[in-house]
Amino acid sequence: MEEIEAKGTKKIANYLLNYSTLLGMLIIGAFIIYGYKNGLFTSTETFRDFIVSFGIWAPIIFIFIQIVQVIIPILPGAISCVVGIIIFGPWIGLLYNYIGICIGSIIVFLLAQKYGKPFVRRIVGKKSFEKYIGWVSKGNTFDKIFAYAIFFPIAPDDLLCYIAGLTKMKLQKFIVIILLGKPLSITIYSLGLTALLQYLIGFIK
Image 1: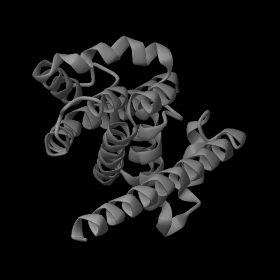
Image 2: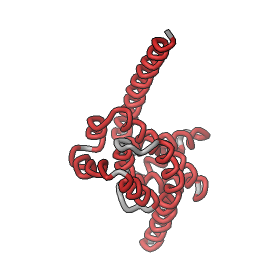
Image 3: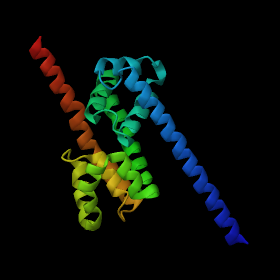
Image 4: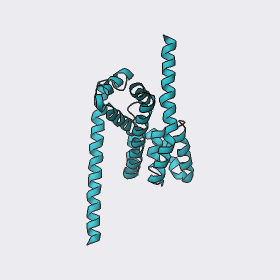
């Protein structure tokens, strides 16, 4: 009896997870359509003005967008990191970048783990999928490659998070790599590119 109840509970949980994922994807899809129609992803100024317009809710909206851009690459991550610094300042902006990207990376891993190769192929595209799917069979070697890629911005981190979800890597290990590895790459993107942008603006003036 207890076994039947446990199976029933698990089945309900799976239904809720599937419907929640579908609802989340629909919300993300609607936001992406809105963003493209209003030029949010083609203009840094438009994107910044959109975030600032939410007032006290701006941090939450920004973190949400950072999460979305990890799950579905609607704009280059470097751009959103720079906008975070411009809007919130170097340290708070860096914190919001870190929170959003880490949460998005964990969600990506769980989605890949739950829905498998067909789902990942649709999200990342056939060409990218075929290029990196061979890494799944590398076992512990992949774990090391993944850790290096996360620590240093030398590879498509978000895509590799999807691939990691297809391996035997444990969620706990993935989270540790993300939490410890992301600060350096995010700092390089956030502060480094912001400084470069300011230098170029000053040089042009």
